[in-house]
Length: 202
Image (cartoon, rainbow, N blue to C red; front, side, top):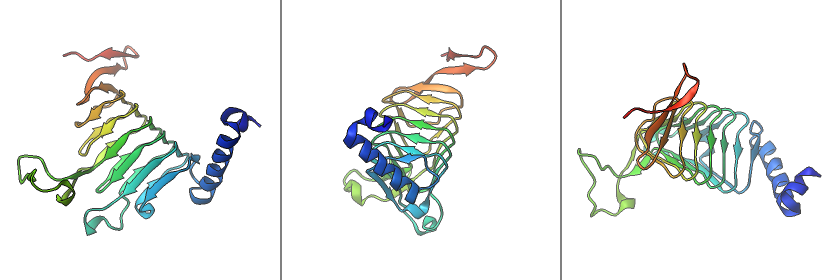
């Protein structure tokens, strides 16, 4: 059997068990590999064709009563997340259709404390005692997010963009761009007239 030839007997059995789990609990999904940690499932919407890697954690944790009954984490159709991805939503996190997310990616709209210029939290207060603050995150359709990327609150990643490995996205990225670094900066954009990626002018 091709499954056991590719993954070995133990790996094939684990995959088979994951497939049974998927069909029982997430019938619209393609494959959810176990272990898979989902918290407050009733606040999460997962689209058709969803695929996950091993040891993923997706959660919705509303910091106030206003969000207690509405969907906070919306995952579109044909989304694939790989191993050890963690997505946390407190206000709103949207993952569009046909998004590919590599391993060890962190996406969250939640922050322990406020570190802006207005009413900032004191560093003398323990982090876990600071008030939770949220700013929505939107990842539009056809986005590819590379290995070990961190996406912070208040960010929109435009349609068709690519985020390079190890990047930290703290500001919005326009559509059809390639962004890399920490903080992530746009280095290329897709030129539709030339039909190729070109370097962004400084």
